[in-house]
Length: 216
Image 1 (spheres, one colour):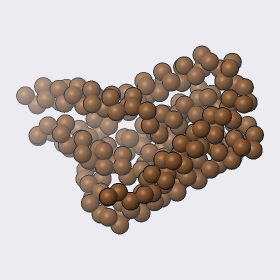
Image 2 (cartoon, one colour):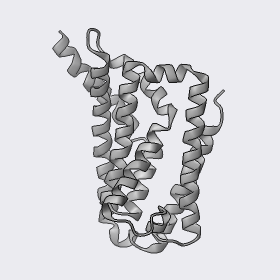
Image 3 (cartoon, rainbow, N blue to C red):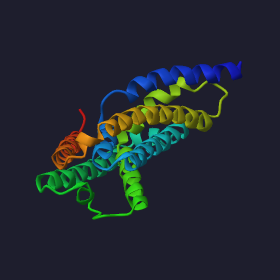
Image 4 (spheres, rainbow, N blue to C red):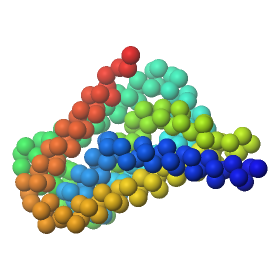
């Protein structure tokens, strides 16, 4: 009975999480911008950072940490404002880089870093954008309990569900990164890359402002 309930729960969750994954949002914009302006390796690093953040929130929701955070007005507000400030700060950097006509390296503020340094910076940005957004935690708190069968360790099942969501995210991001790579000749133009920095920067600022505004 227990062996049958876990695959069923995973399949049901995969369907719901898949629909959420392909819905355009902040994570997609972040990975797309990285793919267009920096290439496949940093884009995959960004995607892994985003998925690591999802995994962290999933485990936290399963053990009740996210529920406590969501229930605490002070903690939720503090994390929300920190996340909003980070999004606005990051968006302003990219928007300023686009207006100032700097290249993708300057847009990240790293000059001409090594491949490893660029990958680490991209992972860190993807992770920070996700883990500093308490709405992701609230989403997991609302969704995960519905797919955790009885008599199954909550932390283990939560990790499995978050892993399923992360795998779907990697598949979706791979499609986006591949499409960007196919168009690399046109996308390599400085004007296009500046435009992408500007669009993504403005999008991040918009998400940051929306996150900062108290919910009614």
